[in-house]
Length: 158
Ligand SMILES: [Zn+2]
Image (cartoon, rainbow, N blue to C red; front, side, top):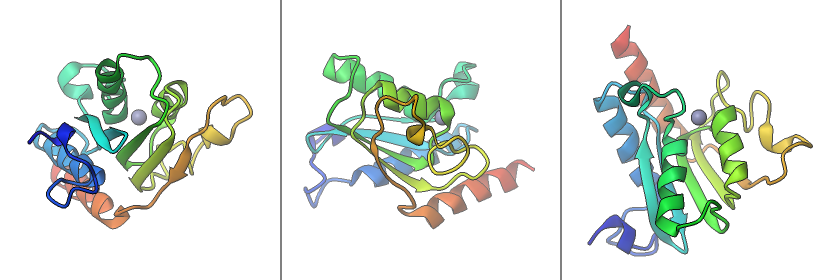
């Protein structure tokens, strides 16, 4: 059974944040900053992606951006109303903007990012009056696991 055929309530199926972590670990294996993202619609995973800016030579190839593009293709729409995003790191300003434009319903993220985050840190994008769609946000889910993954990656690269 493919991940897309499973529901989070399916005890045999992975929960979306676990799939995001798999994507993050795969990204680390490619030499990318370990961040993974998953998009869920109606209880089904419609897209998942890990960071690929180095591989694609594209600074916009963050996990969230790639997952949003794939999800839009999967649902054949430029908006992801009713979709939820799971990501292992607090989204940056660029990704927060894309999340807003995509009309994503909820964002679940793991580690807070005081340096690059734009949701609960930095510009707090969704709280700005110029932000026309703000998702519900739940941060800090499995935070220590994501923080450890990032710490390990950057320590190995030193
Ligand atoms: Zn980003």
